[in-house]
Length: 198
Image (cartoon, rainbow, N blue to C red; front, side, top):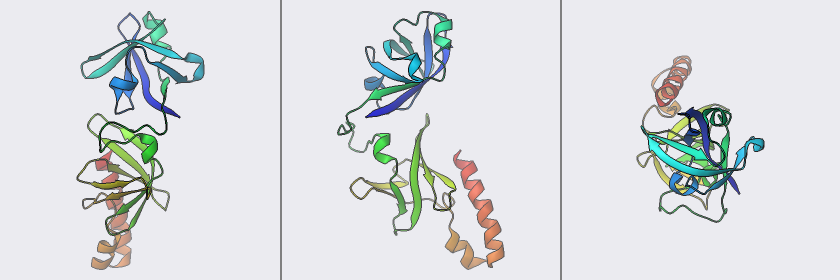
């Protein structure tokens, strides 16, 4: 099975190094010197990692045969893809590969349906579940212990304990105001929550 592990950013310096946006929890394994990666678009690869180093908090890679800034810049926005055994599991007990989490149903502890995970966004500070709700809208849920209470791969679901405002508390609003007010305040709350998360 193939997993996207990074996206090539801009060239760094004049010797062929590039910055990369890491999309794996195991960069030391997937993006180590000697690793051979497929690419999207396929015409730019496969690429063999020659060297890797961290500079100002960013990972810099150099690929075999890419020796100057022009060649490095030509790789910009290329996706780097690793072959992974679908049975392979991450080393950490509470770690998961993206493909294990995509399509999980997201529910609250009382069983209320929130939606389905469609994408994982790997940010420097934390990972985010991008969840598609039944009405087609999206909600961003930080993948942190305080919010994601359980990942149950057998049941194909993620159980969350969202803080107030992360997802709409429709029942609470509807009970405290009349329906017209509740609709407008729900809309306001939803966009505010999305704004806070993004």
